[in-house]
Length: 294
Image 1 (cartoon, one colour):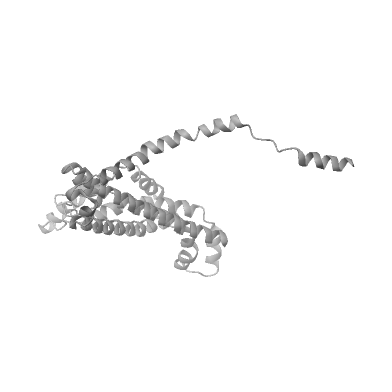
Image 2: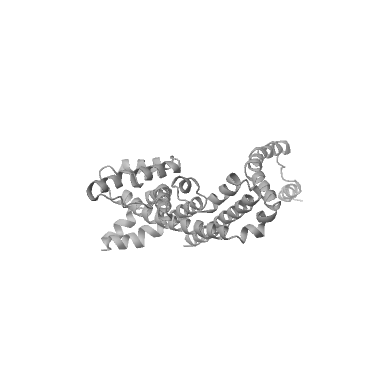
């Protein structure tokens, strides 16, 4: 038998080196701390909520809560406020991001930093600012009263006041991803489009926005999830007629001590959030796949 055949036989008969099993076991141990943290912080509260919701009696059962008029009204109001606030934040955020990225002006850096600062503020501060500005005793009404003798602004305790406050607070969550997306946009594409005689609107529509869709969708999805679960802004506006699902959970769980009924509504709230997140991940995966295919 030749030397080459012997080498081939030895190579095929020699088993591949096995990884060090003690080392792999020690590496697997690092999985447990984050897993335990997730179980304690996320899974255990969800299990308790589900258990509590299953133990309701009378008006606190699943059927009684879901068929009640106040639940249907709160569900519809939550959807209306969340969708309207998300659309407003998308429109305003896209406009601000385009101006900050492509229309340089003195002080643009300061404006961008102020927008970033809003991300670090609690939501109720925005509501308090709205109260001081647009409340019945606010600064704007005081100025109008000095001229006309009337105080016409009285919208904070309405759904429109809640929507305006949420748009103001959540717009930076749209601006920041868009600015990051615009920063990666090649200026060569803009120069070529401009040299071919494309108008600014066409450049925006055909070059800039297609590249910004993933960031816009990510920011809009985040805003939709946050507005769907927003509680502080609704509470601090004093809008008693604006009953959303988080407000209804607070009322039944804290005010009336109906923990089982509150757990039912909380389970529905969690299910809505998970469904919206699943839809977002599905759409984002398809868009990413199409972009890679191109």
